[in-house]
Image (cartoon, rainbow, N blue to C red):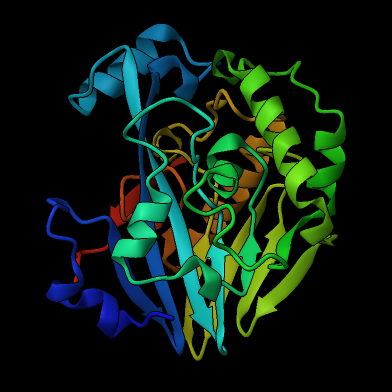
Length: 303
């Protein structure tokens, strides 16, 4: 088990960790730990398949980023509530060959989290960078053999015969398909499916949104008067400025835009903080409406 106090102790930092890989916060009585699974360099075009090349190049240049490669952050969340420890997504494992990704097992160890202490796993969806960690040696075999894995029923139904016809999928649709198949073969008996929403632990509720994948889900945390939403892949870094851009991994790009705009408008209205899988670590901040688009405001780190 972990607590905010434990994870903030300097002595718990691995001596060879030169940059932080975890960020602790509290939502009322719920402890939350954002853990970096590393970063994954991909072609910059995966950010926006429907963008004019010049527009995407300008967006990257405005941020002093290279024009051809975008390095995607990979963030995972661990939540403790009511005596349960919930792992939300599991990183990429060894599903895609890059030494800077697939770091979750090492970083859970650095945070003092024993995989055997995890009581529940929640998957926002079944892309390789969210389920791959469950197939890698670092976690596979170290989790409880009967740990329940919660996800939307629509997600499992989709991956039984997935449709990749509506987007580019970064040219790795075969890897996505194979990783999902391996996951289903390994963990099918542990899947706990829900239709619209399910409360996994006190104040930890997973909601199906669809869009990015048919069963894509977000996780809402609520305790006392505090709130936090883990958006999974509903939003990527370019979507605050260009919510209309299609990510290469959106299975239904038009629906993904509708879901994204709805969620961002809702969070802007409530000023509720959010975390997301592919915003720069620790991806903890708020969103505001800025005319017809949005503005991302990272929360100041607290030490």
